[in-house]
Image 1 (cartoon, helix red, strand yellow):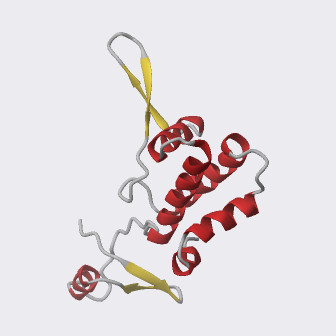
Image 2 (cartoon, helix red, strand yellow):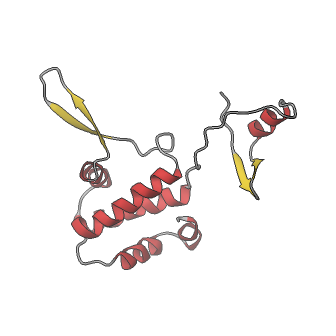
Length: 146
């Protein structure tokens, strides 16, 4: 299986990288491809998310890692691991680029924002929180974060 990138444009997919060009070059007119499409992750949104975690850490004194761990547990973004003893542990899922596409990450990030304004920073309106995060980032990063 070849992993490559295409850009959606006017109802068509345009090759975005060399592998995509080579893939199409090897096709004959009328060939049918099976495509499993995912929306590529937005690095700006990833930076925005970690700026949010840093902002929470600055306010609470907790590490980014602990905050992310707690949020995954509270949001149910976990797998249950049953030990031989019968005890079940919760293992937080990965949010790496390979583990979730942009659509999944955007939903997770939105759920995190909702949880943050209830549990970590109660009383802070969502709009104020988002503006604070954008102020942490450079104007270019903030513009591409969402």
